Length: 142
Image 1 (tube, rainbow, N blue to C red):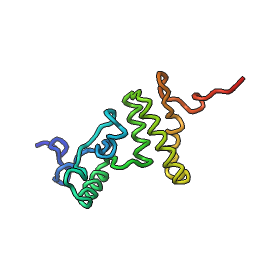
Image 2: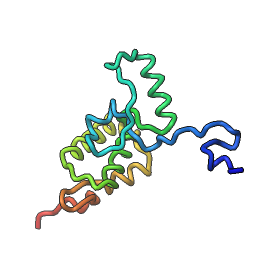
Image 3: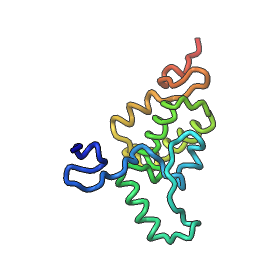
Image 4: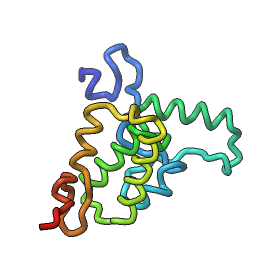
């Protein structure tokens, strides 16, 4: 007699929901994340999937923790994943930083919470040096 955890079910006897948190919806993120992000494949509009069905699918994926749109939280998480995976693609980082700045400016600097801002303050990618604080990426004339 094994417990529910050993059998892949919940204490109530139902199946355990899949753990998809931390994945990125390929239909949106593959343009930015290239080969560096962990993806989940799902139907796209061009797969003969109508807009209503796709919206329901994306809502479900989002509820399971999948990043389904390019927004503030998704961009910060994307940068965190790239850093953790040791990504060195400077063009990708430049595009992501540009999107972060555009979103932040468009929302009058209200879209990122304190934890996200703390991460962004130390997340400047410098080729061959890694991720540094912005103050380490500037210099003064002497």
